[in-house]
Image (cartoon, rainbow, N blue to C red; front, side, top):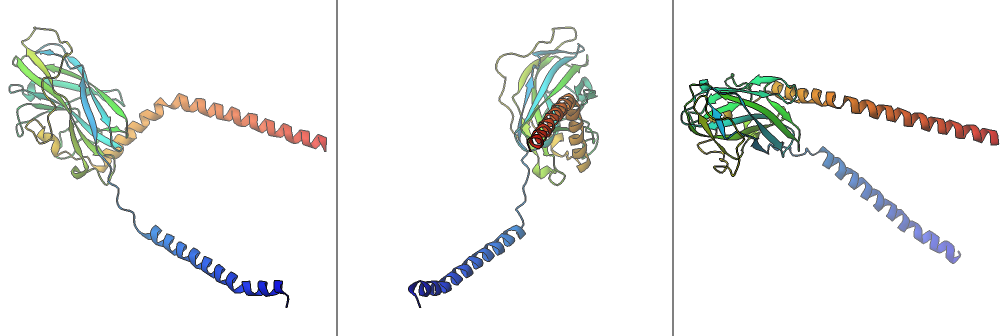
Length: 292
């Protein structure tokens, strides 16, 4: 037998062994892949976090005077969420009957009556909820606002005090209760309560002083969760799954309406490009046929 034949024959067992090892490795990897795919992923809990601030809150509010305007600005730093904004008026004399407030739904552009809630449990003041909180546990299904992850929502607010409001010093602080926009994680355990910087203002006697935006440094640091200034009425409010779905759908309808013109333009451009490509291909085929 020639040397070349001997080497070839002797290499067969090594080749077979190598193929077997490779097959075993592939099979092992496949089994491992199946096992990993079959193992359940750990549950992902949506993040409920953000910031809130008042914009243009006036330095004075006249009892019995005209409405004053300001904004509450909410920035979502977590995952998609539904929010319950609140303007907390710190005062030892104001009552719910002396406050008239309304807010503009940023999606429907309609003005809605706000809901003042006495804060007797956790401190003096009135929590002006920019929502409907007439229920004992769940806000009205159309009252919460959807904020996509990483987006900012600005709520326009108008506030007036009746002539019965006593003159004196007061404060205003923004709060927002943030719930994950997730049917399975919209409960209180996944929610967060965020507060912002306090603004000082003065309630003037009827007919005195015009409202002017507050200026200068804030009068106090932002209150923290658990302090006496946290609106107790907010802690027990939990949106239903239907509330979450409707808030998301409301925001989606507004986005669709706002992007309608842009979508149409994109569609027209795409159709024009597709037509040009089709014409170019047809011309090239025709030229090839003539050459042939």
